[in-house]
Amino acid sequence: MNIRIIKNADTFKGSVLHNKKIFQVEEFPSEYEGIKMVKNYLYDVENNRREEIAPDIKKYDIFHIKKLDYNSEFIYFATIEDDDTINRKIKLIKYNIDTSKREVIYSIEDDLVQYNDYKRTRVFIINAFYIFIQNEFIRYNLTEDYKGYFEFEQFLYSIKDEKLVPVVDDNLRNNGIDRIKVIEDNLCVLKTGFSLIKDKRYKILNKEEVSVEGISFINLGQFVSDILLMQKNIVLDTIDQAYFTETFSYIAVKGDFIVYSKVKNKIHEEEVVFYNYKTKETKICINPNVFEEKDLASTYVIGRIPYLKLTNIKGTQFYNLIKNKVDIIFPPEDEVEAVIGDLFIVSNKKKKIVRKEVDYINVYQYPQLRLLHREKGAFKGVMATTGDNVYILVD
Image (cartoon, rainbow, N blue to C red):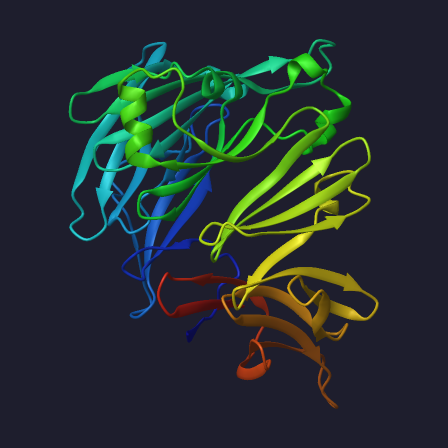
């Protein structure tokens, strides 16, 4: 991998796009209560230049937008048309980062007051033809001492036909879609249902109030086809489920693995699962004493090997689940900031004889932990492309 350093990055946040430019979002207060205004930027790393995207359009953080086509040259943002009526028109805009062409692909008239503390909308961009829309509504529990987004309304929107098709599958409508993670091409992993680990919901909600959680594989083409055909049983290849006494706290795609956490609420035990979606093999380990999100295990796939990160007085250790032993150790003075592919980004401070402590960033390569690069400065973040570039952000 090529290691690239970006300096003076203390407020730098973003994601890498297909053309190796970095997409940045900055938030500001807006004229609408509870809704933030945003500005989008493209940062050209090679030329050290930042340019605002479509500065003539006001953008708002009113839709939670998830793009499922990672290799696309498009980004998406929402704007609000101010026409002095109760219901404002919200528009979803598709923007080509190569040509600067923009296009309104979806619009809706809605009361913005709902978005303060009642409703949120997730938008999954499936491809150039279809969008999956999920409206989520705040509901109180039976004892009325807790509220969350527990009710769902879902549609598939055809961009070409400008047509909304309601989802009639009971599993999706009742439990909601929590996450869709792209694996490759047309294959995704889908997490349905809401987690009980958040806010210790397992102590608050009754059995009849919780959702059935599932982790499943979906083919996006089949998924779209099933919705268009109004199928009541959409095809899902489910690999695990949880309900009431068990809950999924997170799911991630790491290398060839679907990594997820299944917490058993009554005994406060976490089952960490590494599921190899290519070989169908599963590696499981147990993490005890899990009461809330901060107690969850830290999982990694390094050199195609599943690892758990352990932190104690000996420093930072990585437990190899194939060898069933710790085989990577960093001393207490080293802070492992990130693991990208087979690279460890580690920060530490070195004392100078006549000067104060100096921050350094070291990059080591697995498995020999060979030092590839050393940089003076404080670590602020890291981003990686799907290719060979790793961008380390330094103050």
